Amino acid sequence: MTANISEKYQLIASDDELCLQLSGDWLFQSGIPDIDPLLRDLPSTQPTKLSFNCEQLGRWDTGLMIFLVGLIQSCHKSNIDVVRESLPEGVQKLLRLSFSVPERRSQQREVLGQPVLAKIGNVTIEMQQNWYDMLSFIGEIFSAFLNFLRGRAHFRSSDLWFQIEAAGPSALFIVTLISVLVGMILAFVGAVQLRLFGAEIFIANLVGLGMAREMGAMMTAIIMAGRTGAAYAAFLGTMQVNEEIDALKTVAVSPIEFLVLPRLIALVITMPLLCIYADFMGIVGGAIVCASMLDISFFQYFQQIQGFVGLSHFIIGIVKAAIFGILIATAGCFRGLQCGRSASAVGYAATSAVVTSIVLIIVADAIITVLCQVLGV
Image (tube, rainbow, N blue to C red; front, side):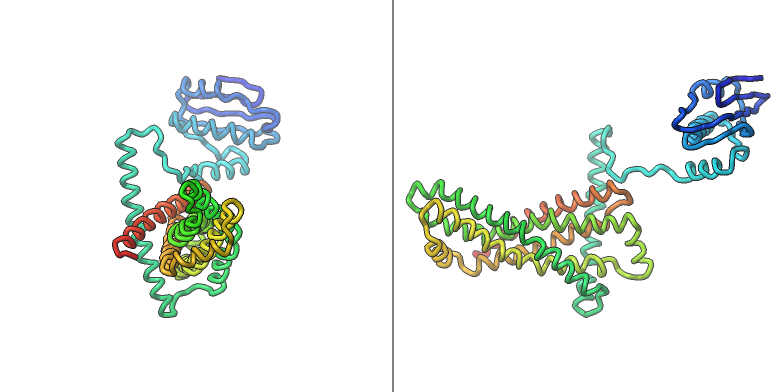
């Protein structure tokens, strides 16, 4: 008997078996027949098998595939066995491909809609795992650095020079801009109060000391965290998605030595140099404000800094910059190698690298500042 008749399909039921006869052209542009009436008829007949008759089937494209995928999924839910052998060979191949590849779920954390305790538990577990992974990563870096000191590290010298250029000269413009503006801001802030006491000359002390000990290294580190740290995470994350990291491990090449070590060494070399440059440009920014607003000549300004800001203050800033470089490279490479296998995971890795770097920079700066005060440096 005929259970349902449509312009493009006809469902014929006999005992416990169904036969769906397809006819005409099944093109997406011409519209896909409504599958709901057919789905409503399937449970009422209580069949166990569904086959197809495609003798009158004409041209077909994605429209037929959408119809069949929805029908097969509904049959599986109703425990109906679908006989695909009666379909055209091209349709069978596409159906096998559709059902053999599972839907890729996003690598982002899914915490929406969860109870509060479940969220706390997930965050705690993730923090514990990140801490364990970070310690393992630091150990691998230390081992790779020892191999480097013994001349046994496996990486290309051209990669090291390329990373030095990317992290150093290529960042001069943004470092110059930010450092000059920070120096001008420090001078403006000092001028507001010191002008009340006629002590404008001490603005040079404020700008010189602030740039040498804190702001030069700090602002350079934050710039490099957003610029270079994120680049490291995105680059290594993309390699992780493309399975290039797995390929290196397959040929017995350590990703830590080949990829991480050149980036770490490059930042350790360039960060102190950029810090010195940022200190100078910040002092120049303060000099511009003093010369243009406070009638303090460049000679007076630099002479005051020379007499007040000693070399030890600059050394403290340079040491901070080197430590910040290690933290930025470690955080960026760690998040990149920790990346998942999707495009969204690469974006999350870059964001996480910047956040982790800035947090580590602030914490490290606070610790170093307290140690300097305790030691009287």
